[in-house]
Image (cartoon, rainbow, N blue to C red; front, side):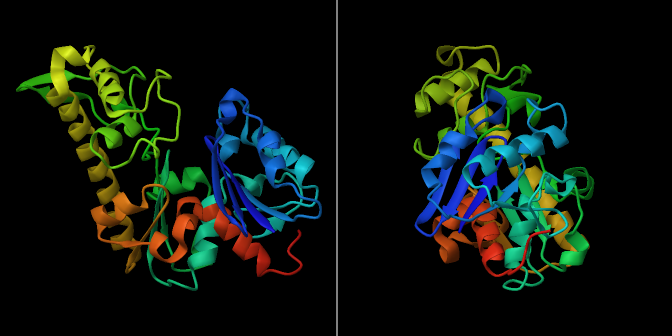
Length: 312
């Protein structure tokens, strides 16, 4: 049995041998089938969750769900897909849309009852109160956005003007231009929150993933070359973005915790270490290792293994 999480930007696979994360942007028609063939041994079962149906290469979520189901089943004909009804399905039903967060809750609910799960990924942050499955079952991404359980900011792929409109450079308030010149991966690399190896997405300009090149991209955000604003200016942009992002995340975590009266904060995702320090929470990597980086893929495998007769 393997677990698969098909996101819009990343394909994550959990096997008995470990966790594997592939940058797989669906909007660039990255071939899911070819990547999955690496794991498609004869007789292998697969349990699957998704969120990639929202990619704008699809005209609707229904089209995205069909594409993902068909792509996976070409490699794993008997694949089972977990839905927002907390059940497994063998066909492209609407409930499959963005159910990856729910399977994480399904896996952790009994282990950490009453906790608040915060999964900081490359693109989004899931905030999930582990109270009852009944309270979570059936929620769509729209519902979660409205309730504060989905915060659309991530460790790597958030554009700079998504969170800040101006930055202070040498005491001068300076507007940020709304172009996709740099993203959160550049910020977190410059601030040493991630390493070059952890910069796993393609940069906006397609160039290097070293600190100097990242600062050059940040300088573009204020229509400048790095030589014009220097390292100090690039770092000022990075700090301004991180202050806005950390404030957004802390506010969402505190609101969810206060409203739902949750206890311990559990931290997962590629940003687990950062958010655990930010919110004073438990980093699930200490218990799960690299599986915490791809929690839904790991969780759907575990949930499937403990559920006999799971097809609907």
